[in-house]
Amino acid sequence: MQRKKKNRTYYLKWLAGVLLLAALVMGIRLFLVESLHLSTDSMETSLHQGDFVLLDKTPFGKQPKRNATMMFYSPLRKDTVHPPVFVSRCIALPGDTIRVTHTGYRINGKEYPHSPHAQASYFMANHGKEAFIRLLKKLPERSREWKAVDGGITCVLTSFEAYQIKEELPAYLRSYFRMYSSPDYQFIVPQKDRAYALDSLSLLACREAILNETEGKAVFKDGKLFLDGKQTNFFFFRQNYYWFLSDYRDVAIDSRHLGIIPEDHILGHIFFCWYSSDKNNRFTSVK
Image (spheres, rainbow, N blue to C red):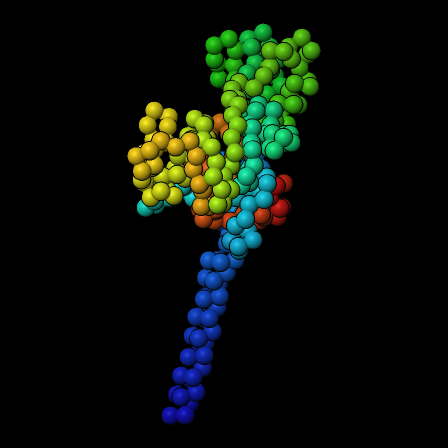
């Protein structure tokens, strides 16, 4: 009888230990750090689809720093039931004036070049097609797929790869090699408890934020904002917002499609890659 009692006590203690450990692990995953398997190629080539990374979910980790790789979920009202999750680089902070050009970003008047991992489509005219394809084949690791367009061919490259190719091209062909498409734009990223004037571009970028903050009561008509039936050129924002761009800009979803991202939609900071198909990325901090 006494032995049975001891056995029961032992198993109860063992069960309590297992439950405590499970609660501890769950707490760490929910509030501190979580290991994730990336299903997106939006940050190629700094991170690859299929990589295993660590996500900092602490309050500190949820406060984006400029150029940090962050995870957030969609702010679109149509996505409120099962919002998709995205990974992108934080380009602008609340209150920043941002201008995006083909060479980089100008934030508060200071120039920031694109990340060397940032990818875009580059164009080579037919005059230099053969030389360009030969140089593509010399690039390591990734297969290079190019496609024919009017007057030449295009291929997706990182900023650094484009630099390498341009350096190796004969001087007379360099003028035929350029980024294929890169629209410029500029606006102010809203800061909490401040009112901002809204032009047509900023209104487009802030549309979902305004709808969310007004609980769907804002009306947009002919490129203008109406609140309580009256047209207004200003809006008072109650949250901090951020602007994100992915390294793989030609195919990824980021703030160009989703608009500004509110602080309460940020899941955390991706700070470490512990496994990758690229051996050079294993056990490295994420830049």
